[in-house]
Length: 182
Image (tube, rainbow, N blue to C red; front, side, top):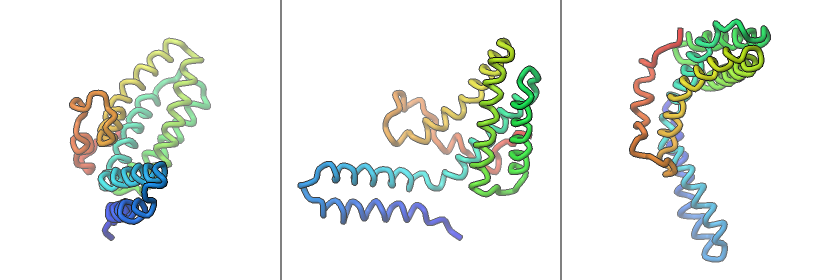
């Protein structure tokens, strides 16, 4: 079945502009401004709809790679290691699927990020040297996610250095060729 999300976003934005805005007239400038903002958000998501699933895969696989990297640290609380091991098991199961369900990627990513946060907190309190090393690794693995966010929101016009933002397509590429963490 063809995804019609882009058409739906476009129709909703057009309806707001062509029907709601004229009906408001000049009497309610705040409401007219809100309609303009909402229509802009719908346009943004219309233009990004076809990139949403590849973006989720990219984020999922980036967090999976980070979790894999952190899984070998012994100088953290056993509960943090256990939570990470469980999250990794579930994420690997999702990653083995040819096309993981949209919600499954969200759940696995959320579980990975909670487990990673637990490792960070535990490493900082258990052993300062391990905490510093874990923090460095997390920062290193965060760079691709920050680049993706900058590229994703570039059309919003708020990036301080937009000419240095890589195109979204170059980051997402062919999702079938996205490297897997295992």
